[in-house]
Length: 225
Image (cartoon, rainbow, N blue to C red; front, side):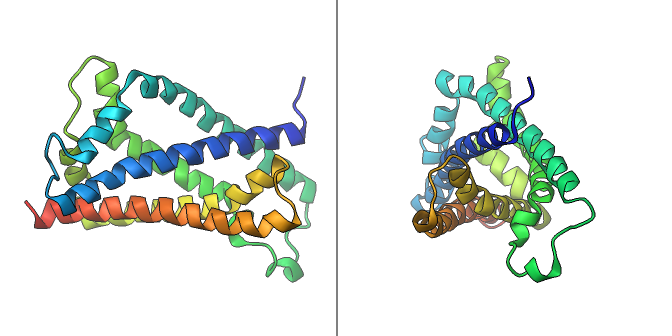
């Protein structure tokens, strides 16, 4: 039996919020590398970032990877289905000129932003996950996380690519955060504005944290060797 539009939106919202929690965790561990740079423990086996990577390699986290992947895939599938449905429903009448100032750019381009994020997720997995968690899962020795950071961000253009990705991710999350709470019924006229600002704060933390990691990786690879 086909799922209703409301059910699809609920699945998207719940999976999206779940992924935001994972992003916060992932960003926090990445930022340990920045703290290590200030503490003088960058590259050390007992550095915070190294310990964070060890935590990500624990069995309980490894088990969660397929769950996260499944949630991400489901989120993408229903995003495409709903976008196609909305496109067909609007027909030849797109966003009216009078409404352009009212409709946020991000809300009108969620699918485009999602495609950008998806493409760079695959790029990111090839740079880090494949050389760390996947190798450990296959019984091989994982690469040094600090060396991976240096190797990935030693070129300025790679840092720019990642920052563009983080910005696209942030724009996607800004709309998705409060929209998810609205869909699951936890938002109203009072809380809509509050959740919007909370969402902005959460997204800013995520984006700035990831950007700081990339910039610090560039600095460590080029100025501190």
